[in-house]
Length: 449
Image (cartoon, rainbow, N blue to C red; front, side, top):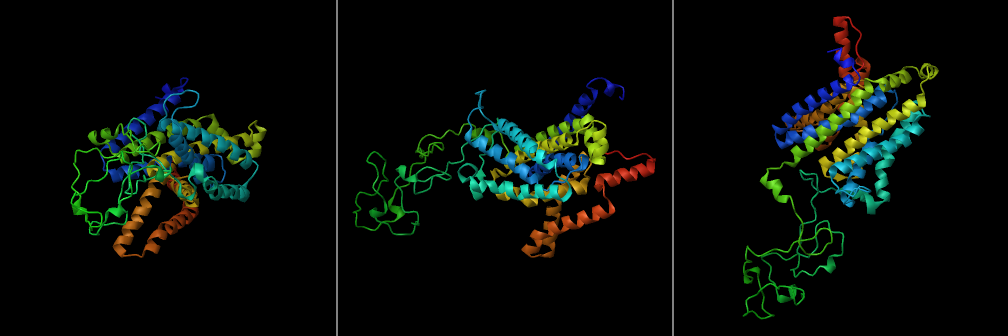
């Protein structure tokens, strides 16, 4: 097996086979569990994708980052804006779908990572921490300066993805006043005869409750013996024929017309479960990120990052550029964070400043420290902890009858205590401690990743 991996490209093939096997096993697990478990699997995969970048940035290159949640926001917003506003791929002209949005989110993450990395390469210690902390606070707030494009404080709602990668219009509910849910156009331009929104079935109505409608519109039929001054109830109106075609809404124009809901039947007929689809997407992206990270960490670039981390002066003497190494680590970390942010946007079907706050950046750092900041396996373990711990605290709160304020803040308190214990007792995290224990038993040096 060792000789097989030594031929040109052998390590690449070995990593690909390993990742494909892991992907296949997790997908089988994903297909056999309930939607709630699918949701948890998607979150773990999303956190793992982001923390692969944290392992490279913090564990291998030795830089401090408190702002990877902001880099996730870049990916999430690029995904949302492109999927909502672009119908075809620029230059290529092919139809747009979610995978194209994911690719553009990755490109956006790389560009932002290069820009930030160029600045961060000149900083160290608390100054670098201050820069990334400013990113965590400032980048999500940019949405408030561009409410027309980024949705402001309310954020953007993303339409539900279909199995073929397309998107269905979300604005399809018509209210009694003729407006459409999520409609941005002028509701007054839609002529729909409707009753007052505040009228209940038991209220007494007169014909004055109904505004004048276009003569061509079909007005509601009323018993002919009723005069305009009589008081009416909804019982005076005959039940509508169930076979009558209800007015449909064209979500793109805001006018009443035929809405294209192609594929909606597929969701019902095929038993499509959105949580399972989202988890499958998150698993696939995480496995792709793991494959890239494995080849970088175990290749020449990984040795360059470790050399700069251990002694930047010695690395410079040997011909390695510490600045380029740090910038490349930031770019790769930002790439993985942007992919995770795009997946997070899919899971939530929403992007907004509140979804990518400072707490998310701190959670990623906590997960890497707990799992093992120099290990890709530690990133997966850290993702499991970030998903499992709040649920564990919630179960304890239900049993103990805790107040809501205590329940909401208990996970943060436990995170802090765990980080302190890990730093004092197990600096290498869970994976590092296990590797150290194995090395003592076998009397071999522990592996880094």
